[in-house]
Amino acid sequence: WTVGPVKELTFADVNRDLVQASSCASMTTEDGLVHEILCPVSGRIVTRNETLLANPGLLSDDPYHEGWLYQIVPTELGYELDNLTPCSEEY
Image 1 (tube, rainbow, N blue to C red):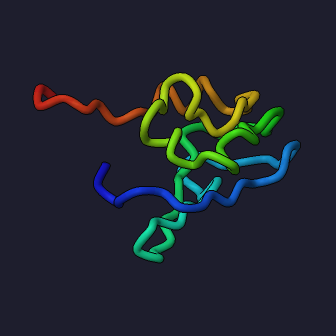
Image 2 (cartoon, one colour):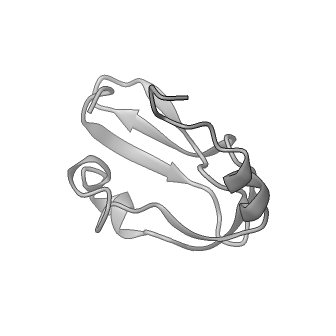
């Protein structure tokens, strides 16, 4: 975890439309710095993980299970998948 332990999270509201690569949440670390979390996909928020508000450490401790942020219904998934940049040295 490169930003330090998370002290507080701020979420977007349910039913909000998000745009890929825009800020969808922010986290404040124990050192007082605020870091924006960028949305990985465009879409509408249908659920947010309220558990993280009481236990923000789950964001780093268990990001693939209990530390998820939102459930989002994608709106531009085909376009966004077609335009992903490979994360490989082979491109």
